[in-house]
Length: 383
Length: 123
Image 1 (cartoon, rainbow over the protein chains, first blue to last red):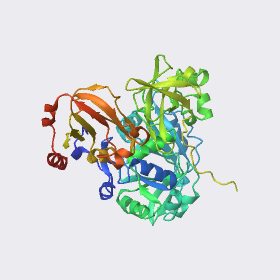
Image 2: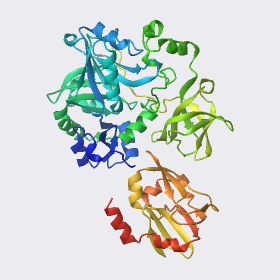
Image 3: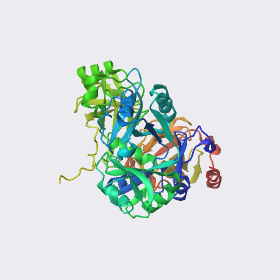
Image 4: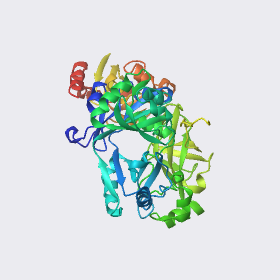
């Protein structure tokens, strides 16, 4: 509980006063004062997001734009640093990727969006983790070619609205949001305020992430919270929601020592990139794709009620330690403890019986699909 | 019966040589939704300052520190099935352990209700 950073040294988001007004418990996170929970509490906030809609302040995350002379140039510059295909990313489409270090470890995971308008093509919008901003930006500055520059966006807030009612609640103010396909984005007005809205998120639910002018963040949040379906949700439930959806938390489930193959996020590597390489440590990563990695991130269901948290050891039944939990906790939607962690690939098969060591006791656990809760991402009806 | 409090946010209710120990309402508010309580077995010898129990919320695990030396004579097994009782009735039905006190003089180090309330005010 003890914060090592003095309260006064923490940065505040444009929604700070609103959090306090809503009775949030504020904590230090990545150098920001952020709401970990509101009055309802993590459990209730989590379940509300799954059943209706939650509003999350994610303004601490880094927003930046890669600006180049044309799409191909900017996309190639980003492809040199990541294993994803950006050249063929369509206008207004979004893609998840990782910045790779020269050993094939992950410097950060990020979302990349190609501008929807052909008029300002050549721009790729990035959203990076709060705690990795400085490292990412320095990396870009060192590695980008002269004709592509990094523009850091400091004057915008980021608001996520997630849950089965999220898009309906947002569309009441920004009707065009209802037309967005999953992993696509567009500029649009929200009550006549210019916003950039993407249909994506970090909960496994349908929903949006809205980049909004900092000065308009509070009126936008208030307009959404005035909707009975929308409740404010803190970082506590954000973490339990993403864990249930099997999504990685940077610095925990993936980091500079894990490759995207080990991390089980090869969906960020499209066919052309896998075949052609041309990204940092391509040789290692292509070899892991071909022969399988030495270890793999897996999901774990724990028997009984005791949660196993980050740092708990994973062992073979009555046997030696073979790995470590990277995220774990009680899953409110599942109603049981769940976890994810790394094990040698030969022990990663679904259904494998393992043990988690918690306070010197061995808890039986079984390797399961990391989608602990089926995702509810929006699929456009076929017309 | 006299009730004492610790700065670790425990209440200690003493009757004869047995202390019933739980966490205060302030502690349960700070923890949030309790999802699991790990209690010591009867017969466990605890020294003041030992980790006596663990209470887990959605967010984190927190140790409950033994406020006194003693031997656990009973732990509240109802909390295994209904950990949420800790949020509902922390200073009543959701007691954690009963301890046979071996060093009654340690009670003088604890706070009375007024002193504990004053302490919480400073947090």
